[in-house]
Every structure is written in C-alpha cells, then in structure tokens.
Length: 310
Image (tube, rainbow, N blue to C red; front, side, top):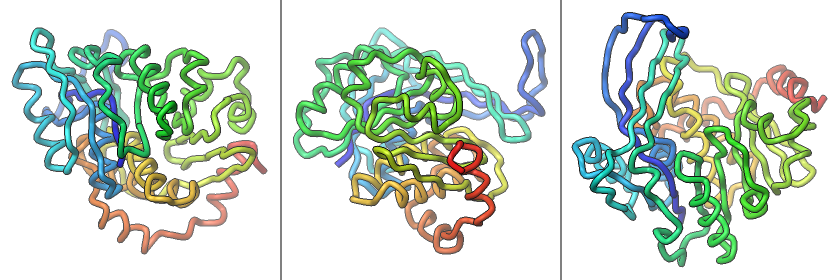
C-alpha cells in the first residue's frame, strides 16, 4: 500500500492565448476550477492510473474549497487521513494555461502548511511513502526519517525546487525531479548524466518534458522517450508520472517498466484539461501501451545523446 503525504489545492484555471509577461494583462478565454495540489494529484494517479491501494495524509481548511478535493480523492478510491485547519483556508493555485498547453502556476499553500511531524499515521501495512515539497520541508524530513526507520521506501518528488538538507536526501530511496530541479540540487551542474552522478540517492528519475525521462539506478542508466500525443493541457502531467511510477514500483515492476507506464499515463494526461480530471484510468494506460509499447529507435538514441549517455 502507498501513503501519499502532501498538498491538496483547489486550482483556479484560466485559459489564454499566451502566458502573461511581467506587467502584461491578457484577456482569458475560459475559467474553471479543478481539484489539484501535487500531493492530491499524485495520490489520484497512484490509485486511478496506477491501480494501487493508496491513502493520503493531507490538511484542509473548513471552507467550501475543501469539499471538491475530498470528493475527487474519494472518487479515485483514495482513503484519507485528514487534518482539519479550521482557521486557515484550503490551499489554492492560480494557473494560466496557454493555447500551446504550457502553464504558469502560483500557489497559496494555506492549510497545507499545517501538516506536522506528529500527524504521520502508523505506517504498518505501507511499503511506499510518496511526498513532494508543497508542505513544510521540516515535516517532509521528519516523515522520511520515520518511514526509513520502519523499512518503508521513501519517494520524493523534489518540487517545487528548493535547497535540500543532506539528512533528508539520506533517507530518500527514489528521487523524482525535472531537469531544472536536478540542476538546482548539484553544486556544479553540467550534463544530465554528470548531474545524476552527484546525487547521493540510490535511484534518481528525471523527467524531460517532450523528450521523455531518464533514470539512474545505482550505476545503471535507463531512458524512456516520450509518447507522441496532441497536448491540450500539461497541468498535472508530472504528478501523473510520479504517482504511476510509484504505483508500478510498489507492484514489483522494474524501473524501466515503471518509467514506461508512468510516461504513457503522463502523455494521456496531457490530452485532457485539469490536473486530477485529466488522469487516465489504469485500463486506458494499458490500452495505450498495447499500441505504443516499442519506442522509436531514433527517439531513444536522441534522448541518450541529450542526456550525455551516447
């Protein structure tokens, strides 16, 4: 079973022709709210797209924004350990989605910052703990240490990027980052393969957007080119990848197969709007993979070259 400890936000999404530059006002095309937050997105991905038994530890305010988040998680069969923060608003995110599917996101954490070390439930029965950095860093560090001591695998999606204490990384079994977050973690960023060698974590997975992803497990490297889809909204794609990757690992899959399934789920998530609302069902991921299982050799060679592996 997987425990996800992290954030839950109500996303306020505006579609626009392009993302505004500093000082620029842009007329939007449509507005809608969606359940989101990196933690909640990843929990839904674990359960819905990954087909794994999943629970989530989260904090919500006593306000109308909390109910859509509860409803979305429960609809995905995610069981909740809920901390109520009655005097603080539920977390919110303001997202602009451009016509080319790029996005810009600003988060007001609210109740998410009310998760503390004493809120961690009994870890009996869990084999993986998945976290992100939209809750207090001290809380993430405490949870990781407790999980490691109990033999639970610790997976950290180090987003949004920030300095990481060595004691936290020492307890992480799998680190998931994008290219920018990887560079922020090393003193002298160079190529991706060189940067990976500088991270003292047993397994590091790097998402590379439209290129695909790469992983280092011990001294071995694995690449997975991205699947070609027509993207309409990339919001939540990275969270879908993280959740499905952990679900696949928890079910005993090798890292290369977990990367393949996570990449397929993330690609499908880009073809629909919203964060949790775009996450595909496990059956959709399997059907997609049945048609797209073999990567194009040229794409794999180009990805290896980009990462410095050729």
